[in-house]
Image (cartoon, rainbow over all chains, first blue to last red):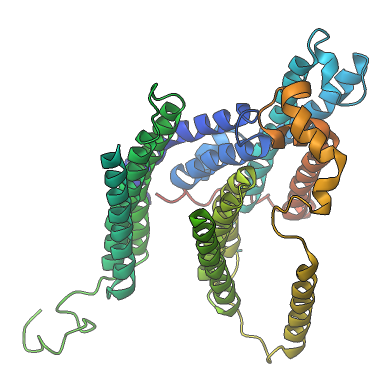
Length: 141
Length: 125
Length: 197
């Protein structure tokens, strides 16, 4: 039904790498400007949804299958809670990032913030993608 | 310096004027395809001119020593301008193609539902 | 003073757009138009958040509300009809309840402090000064104060928020795929369409 090489498909192919790059930029610059995990996860999922809308749901499922997306949801939350447990294992309280670097606690804060924002970003991305997979392709039933 | 302020002001006003033309076309044109043509062309031009006006305005913030942090703002505005120039015509095309594929027929001059069909009432199709 | 009047003008314009869009969404019968209008509503509220200097919130609102939420609602619309069914009779009682609740909230906002007033009670708490003064220079060296409060000072809350997002995904999966044991193939594995071009 869909002809190859149509304008929308080529436009999406050109734009999707830059959307993903913007998502990674927003993720890791959350310390210095607006951004952080939630925004980055949503933008990254938007790139995948654009791919699914223009190239088909089957091609998107070959990139990230629904089972891998489900495992990524758990991985994000596990990373976040794991940072808390790790800080407890290194002698501090739960989610006390200062103990990650004994010489300079503010460096430990940067490390902790980076890791938990990564966990949040992974979870939000995987959740958006999973909800999209569950809704798409059902048709009029 | 004052020249840059004037240029950026003119560009911003011109961009808003083009967007206004697009909005007037959206309200007044008779057919879906004509409206999508008006909005796609005029809105891209309007938004693009506003972006260029903002870039010129950033240049007016140069102090005597140099550009400093304004280089990052200029690069970001240029990236947004490129993104707008690529996606705005493509989305207009996507909407129009979806309408064509779902069977919406354009209002032609010699069709019975044309606005002034009575004026051309004697001619063949 | 010209910045204050320009900002006031922008606020009035944006809010009047929001009110007119909300009234149109409530009155219109075609659901496709309502979904599109709700996407525009989200984008305008993102603009309002930017005017109020809350750029992080505006970012998230634009991405989620104007982007993903519109796509998900259009996908849901594909499963159902496009025209909202007419109500059987005019609904007077819900209108009265909504008007009373709105009127009570309007009356209550007369007692709120002005937006950004430094003598408001929320700014008098010693933690506010502590976050603003020491978060950047002394403790964290993280320039974005929102991220430092969200991730470090109140990191446990953010862990709870992430768990809420996780639970939402689990709920969607349970609702949409819960009928497998009737030996029907799961519809998520059958792809009837190629996607639009």
